[in-house]
Image (cartoon, rainbow, N blue to C red):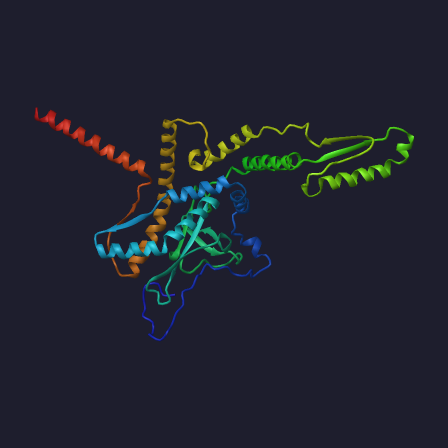
Length: 373
């Protein structure tokens, strides 16, 4: 792969290569010495699949981040690079952010065209394919193959790899998942849901206990045959949910199994668990369809908190966007200053900005009036 440079022969066809593609294990000990998957990745994946509100919150965060434009002095260059990002980057960004929020670490790769003169594609890299290690300076992070042990070499073109970590701990290269700390709470919530399902299966789908009590010795002698006759008649009466009469002789009692048991009220404990989950995800409950009692002022504050969270995630993505844009400019031989301009998060921001400009204009007018007097 030639990054920025030499011309190929016209009849030579070069295919783009993904250097972070999965490889087979080369040693029986490689899976232990070159572990790359985050330890709790399976748990976080199960959390998303088991609790819909967790998956919904992550998708809401990604969508509310909105889009962006690259602003620069040349109008044609601006159109070209924004077309590139719209065609190549936004789908990549959605998966990248999902990976970052779910596992705490996201890795992508910029794949160049065969002649090395343009960006062919952006690829999201599964974490099981790579391993992250600190460089010798203990500052830079290098990406290694996951299937090679001990003395393996990092990928050759580190400048084409995109790596982001969410709130990494000191001395760690992997980030911390947004779902970290929800394992215990989610386990309790799933136990409550499983218990509700089991109880409704037992009590909601009614089961009957048919009891036959022999009244004398002759009845006791024939109790087995009569019990079989009662069972056959009862099965016939209940078959296929058809309406039928049940006729028996003797002392026969019928009771509903579990009718005397009261199903525990799950509203309070479920709400407590969901409160912990929404607090960790920093998503207002009303965005997730939870109609908890709130006030207009509280909703505004929750929206402001979410806005600050989204701004934080945007700052993380700025590094990925800048690195991609820099390589695009270099491949096209362009040296120009640019900046990333994100869309306003929602209409409320537009209203607040307009109101702020109005207040500033009114303040300037009053100051000018006082200065004139």
